[in-house]
Image 1 (spheres, helix red, strand yellow):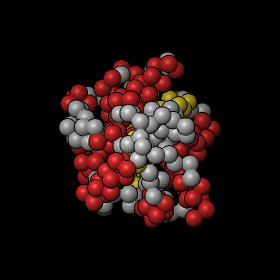
Image 2 (tube, rainbow, N blue to C red):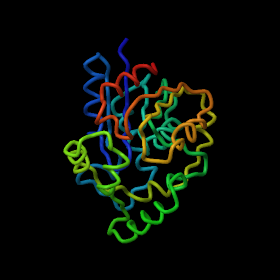
Image 3 (tube, rainbow, N blue to C red):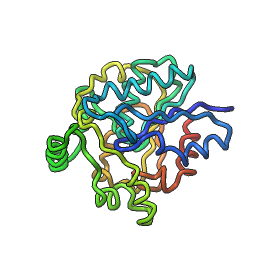
Image 4 (tube, rainbow, N blue to C red):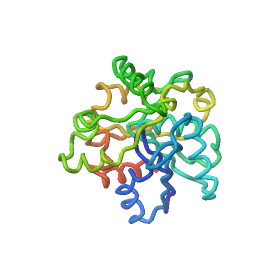
Length: 239
C-alpha cells in the first residue's frame, strides 16, 4: 500500500536534504513532501524567525497539499518541530518518526540539550551576526556530522548548508499536549552518530517517547546523504 511521508529536515538544512531518500521512497511507489522550514534554505529571511515559524511552515505545507494519513518524520532539530506539528494537526498524522532527533521535555529548548561549551560558542556567534544566526563549522561537519563520507562528498553537502536562526534553538517549548497524544511513534537511531555524546540521542532522548518502536541503522548523523536507501528502508519499516 502506498504511504505518504512528510519529511522535516534539521538545522542548517532545507528540503533539499531529503533528495536521495525521497528518490528511494518514490521509486517504491510512495508519496513524499519535504518542506523547507521558515528561515532555512538559500535566500531565506532569517532575522526574527522563531521555532513557531518553523512549525507553521510544516502545518501549512501539509494543509495546502491536503494530506491526511501521513507518516511525519523529523531529523535532528526537526524532531522538536514534528512534536509541535503533532499538537496542531493530530488528526492528519498516522505515525511520528524521530530520526536521530531531539525529543525535548516540556519546557526545554534545543540549547538545553547541548554541551555548555557549545552553547557559549553558538551564543557568541549569534550575537556577533547581523541576523541572530549561527553556522556549522566545516571541522564540526566533517568530524562529527558526516564523518562517514569522503571529503569531497562532505564538502559538497556542507557548501549547501545555510545559517540557522538561533532563536529556534533557544525557544522553550510547551509540549504537554504532545505527551498526551497517543499517536504511534518510532525512533531511528544511527549507530555512528557523533553529533552528540554517546547515548544522548538513544536512549537519552528516545526514552521520553514512552511506548515506541526502535530501529537502529549504521551511519552518521547525516546518514541520509551517505546511505539514503538504508534510511528509506528504515522509514518503510515503521509503517
